[in-house]
Image 1 (cartoon, rainbow, N blue to C red):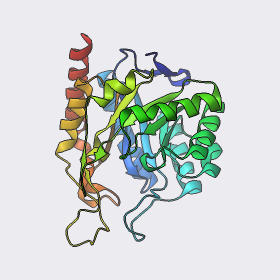
Image 2 (cartoon, rainbow, N blue to C red):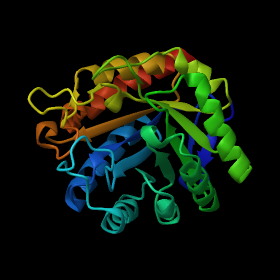
Image 3 (cartoon, rainbow, N blue to C red):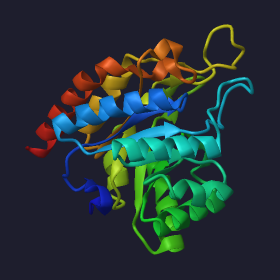
Length: 284
């Protein structure tokens, strides 16, 4: 497995490189919060020698309820992310949901993300891959909750056929296990790496309990926040090349997916532990 790089940022993951950290907010709330969270995570990752990409969504289109907070939207959200990128001098990760968003998103984001529920949408994958490749970025594809690890080969093939480039990072985020529950099969991480791509773990969304909040009639997603570090450590021990984590200064007040977010103050402890696990696995 070759490492993938963002040369402008001196960023690399895979092939025994340092553990990559893709972390930030679930969704943009305001610029001040994004800067505060980004600066804190950047400082922690820097002290630990871990390559860092700031992540936040401008729109959460996949919501349980039509009344759920979705974010500032494409135009305002990309402007906010560009400001974070400029002020903190940090690469950006964000996701998109429609083919028509690809060029605008790729112009700002260095790592463009395909959401799990959309990972088999061929036109979206192809358009995003082409725009991201033209802009010099990388693609981060969440493995759908309905896919086996081996099924991801088709996604990788689509990207290569569309761009001629190996530019995809696959992300494990759990598989549907009955109703309102997800499980993570750690054996899937090396299986996906055998396809020739780096693999990350989205420990945040892997602890979700979709539609499981009591009294919400399926309109709210729950989460098991305490399980995030557990799954992250297990995945890194299984060989994951990077971690995807979401934080918030006050998770219970977060406007979206607070039950799965970690408190920002926990970042140093969690990332220190993950670095130690990664170093042990790779003999550092």
